[in-house]
Each structure stands twice: as structure tokens, then as C-alpha cells.
View 1 (cartoon, rainbow, N blue to C red):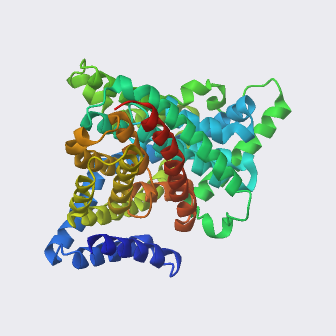
View 2: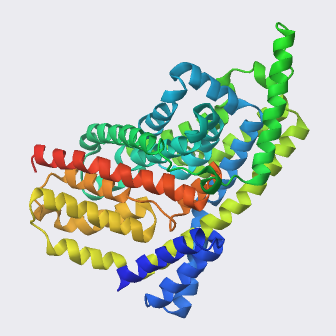
View 3: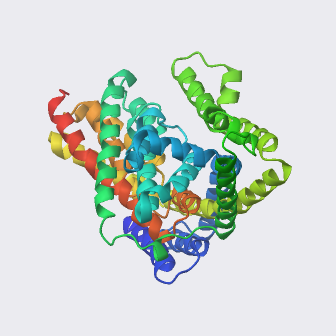
Length: 466
């Protein structure tokens, strides 16, 4: 009954938002209340889960969202994203841009913090979308989504990858080569498949895109200003550019993004290889690293664009941040209520009953447990960690290589990221999509990515000895 009530709650949320056009915040709270009361959490327990779930998510990602959105707003105001897109289009071509983006996110920049990746990468995707035509936004959004999560679950130092390997006692050196290959292939193949899907009448911009009005107006004004500047520059030919930002190397303009990522990655590897200390942990904390990036972006904006433009960019960022924080927090509330229902215990009994099953069945069961946990809980990392905790005690009785079981969990944990995930609502707001559009990109692309990776894991399980 717990699984049934969880399914009903998710369907209620989706139905209210898409069919009845109820605001997501209201729909998520209704779904949380239904599940808590129907699932036996009780009146007081339901209220406690909703409030604590909201608070826990805010403690985890609140500052990350705020700092990341403000960095993006300041860099957009400086024209940094426009210049980056121009460089990428010249370097790889507009048609290859989604594949370059998804590969970069999956393999070169796999993040412990997916929230950091999406707040920093989404402005690039939005700025580049027009160069790909009408399907540019959904294709780049899909490439961004699958790239982030393929790296997160398969590639070290993605948090889910590290957690699964640790709980199943798989050496990171063993995990790394398999994870990189599967992660990269998953991201690329899934992006190709989404490109084919989007060539049909699948995407409806009027219903699937929902750009924040204040942010859209700010971007339109900045684009008009930048176009006027470009025309003036062409007319003057050899004269100096009007704004100092156009004179700075692109690498300097992107230091507010690159420095936080490097600090976070360095701290992760320092902890992994046991040479971390208090200072490394401090500057490598995602909140501190992003604040350093925000400070750098603010100083760059003040020195290149002036005080008035910097203030306008910050105000636009504040407006966007408030909406994202509220929706993200309530999404966390639903996840917390699901956790309180005890669904993980039901799945633990299921796997224990099938210990000693054949190779293919064991891999499929590990995938299924992780996928159901993700559908229910709404967190990729929590699903991966919980599934690993369920399976680890019976791993010795499973005649399959631990690396294969671990990668099966990673594949399943990626399946169908949807409305009970706080990341879903961040993705929606940051990329200017409607709820329906987010389901048609993020939910679909993570489902495809999970299913694309599963056959690779099955082949691995049959080839690698236990």
C-alpha cells in the first residue's frame, strides 16, 4: 500500500500542475499532505516531515542556489555567456554543441554537487539555444540534464558514484575506467536519441517553455544593448571597445565559475587521497567556493559594466532566486514525507528474498530497487546510497562482480527524475521551462539515459568474473 500511495501522490502532483494548471508549490504541498496521511505518517508526523524537509533542503542547497544564480546574472550582464557561446559555435559548430556540452559535464566536470553544475551551466545553455533554432532549448536542456547525471552516478568524483563504490567495497581504481566509458556513452547516445525525438512534433514551445518575465526582460535588454555595441564596434573598426569587459580574455571573465569548481574538486580529491586539512575543506565547501565566485563576479561586473548595470543584474538574480528557493524547498518536503513512509524497508525485503539469483536477474533487480527508490524519494544520491545499503549485506551471496552490481545501482538511481526532486524545480526555473517542458526534457532524458546504460552494465556483468 505504501508504494501505491506514493504513486498516487506523484500522479496527483503532476495532474494538478499540468491538467488543472495549479501552481507547483500548492500542488506539491497537497501531494505531501495526502501521502503523509494516507501512508500512516500521521497528522503531526506529516507536518513535521514537510517543515523539516523544507528546512533540510534549504540548509543543503539554499545558499548554492542564491550564489549560483547571482553569478550567472552578473556574467550574463557582462556578456561573458554570449562570448563563450560564440567561441563554442566557432570551435565545434552549432550542431555539435549539445554533444560537447554533455561530454564536458559528464566526464571533464563530474560534480559532487549537481546543484552547482545546473546553476552555472544553465545560462550557457539558454544563451546558446538560439543558435540551434526552435529545438535548441529542449536539446541543450536535455544534453545538460543527462550530462550532469551520467557524470554524477558513473564518473568519479560524482557523489553517487563515490557513495556506491564505498558502500559496496569497490576500489575506485576499478570503478573509474568502467564508469568513464559508460558515463560518456550514456550521455552521448541519449543526446542523439533526444535529438531524433525533437525532430518530430514532440516539443511545443507555447506550452513547454515558461521563461521568467523579469529575467527574460533583463536578457532582452542586455542583448539589445550588446547588439548595439557590436554594431558600433564594427563601425569604429580599430577603435577601443566601449566596455572594458570585451577587452578581458574570456578565461578571466569565467574565473567566477572555474575557481569554485576547481576548489570543490580539489577538496574532494584531497579528502579522497587523505591529504585534506581544515583550510582545504573550508575553501572547498560548495557554499564558500561559490561565495568566492560571487565575490569575483561582482568585482568584475563593477569594474567592467559599472555600478548601475551591476545593480540591475543583482536585482534580476534576486527575483529569480526567490521563486526557485520556494519551489525547491517544497519539493524537498515531498521527498521527506516519502522517506517517512518506510518504502525502503519494503524494497529491502524484496532483494533479500532473491539473493543467489542468476547474473542477469541480479543486475535487473539491483537496477529496479534503485529506480523505484529514486521514483519514490526523488533524490538520485539518496536512492543510490539506500539501494547500496540494502544490497551490500547480501552481496556475498550474489554471483555477480560487485562493480556490475554497483553500476546497475547507478543506472537505476538515474531513472526518471521528476516532480518530487528539488533538482527538477531548479532545472525548470533556471532553463525557462514549464512543468510539462521539464517532464519532457529532464524526466524523459534521465529515463532514456538509465535505459541506455542498463544493457552496457548487463554486458559488463556477463564478461567480468565475480
